[in-house]
Length: 117
Image 1 (cartoon, rainbow, N blue to C red):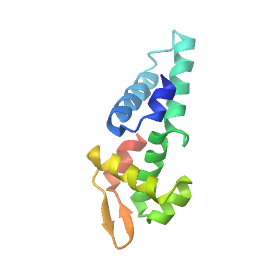
Image 2: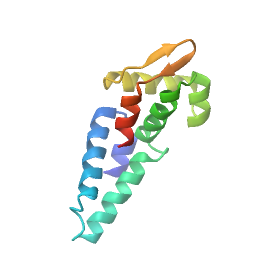
Image 3: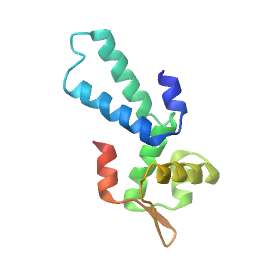
Image 4: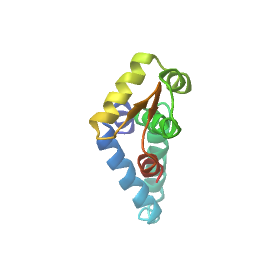
């Protein structure tokens, strides 16, 4: 399941799963089941990893909070310009407002704060 989630590009769906997983871990719902807790922690780490599309999109949102050019984003994510555009489209499809000011892409601080929660 983890590999399926990290390979998909549906930001909204993966974000909802990630938030629910973090909430369950924070409320200690898995404390009585060590194996389940470890699996949940591992899945959370895999989702946030730069090896997953979702993890790279999270990093991209963080970069755009301060303003980042396509070249900046591509360099930090170690991906092509085309991939950056594809990720931008995924985020916009998820309802995240991305603004281009000059040559830098921006997201609102509230969006960046929401994904850091």
